[in-house]
Image 1: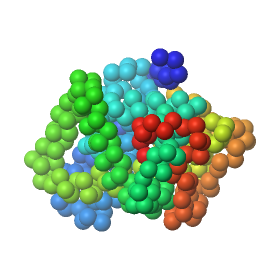
Image 2: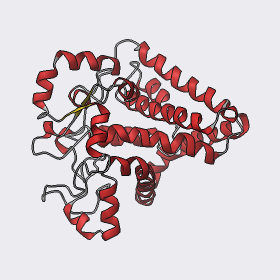
Image 3: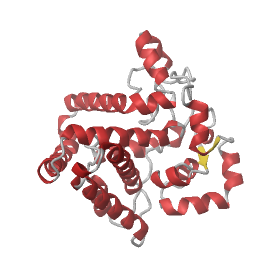
Image 4: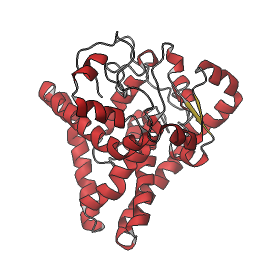
Length: 313
């Protein structure tokens, strides 16, 4: 299986900042859901969105081999499906595939690409092309991206179930059991409807996470020019566990989140030169540039991208 990313280099000791982060996220989630009836929706929604997006950042950290030397223990930390729709095992598989940097943004070989092949784009009708273009603006990605992303993911999983039922069920049965436990907690212990949870936690949490991924990558001939840097983001940088400095993560994917800022500061000039100057001055800069303007054309610029209809866009 040449070309697959190597397993993360596991830490030789427990990374206590990440353990404390996991405790804060899970403890905060339990407290907020337990108190949800007393919290007005206009406070519940941003708090629920933050915790859900923060949990997705934690899952990303965990799948890269943190915070312990035990893969089993790390996966246990990341497994709990607070977002309900995304099995951790599938996320881990897809995201490690994304780290084949030579394939970044490729609509077939990069599982997290937001491009489609030129052939697939030409086959779409006017509404389909308009939807792709809209979701490549920041406003469209945040408002429509969660619905489109979840629907597309579940459709792919349904096809996978038909093609590889045993392997797909191995991913989904534990996930569904854990999701049922969360649903029972919400209903029995918290008196919270599933609709309220989706509206105040799941959908806005995924939307907030999509702010990070929106401008992370762009197509370029040189693969090191495909990964962006968003500087000066103290609040969202914490939410995204410093993956706003995304070029560092692709260069050192096993580097713990709390080590990324110092690594970046010590090598800023080299890293900006290495990524071809793909640099933003905070997320306000991303909003200013792309709120209603496309970050990129939906069709991948390379005519060599395979036109076999397997892309995820």
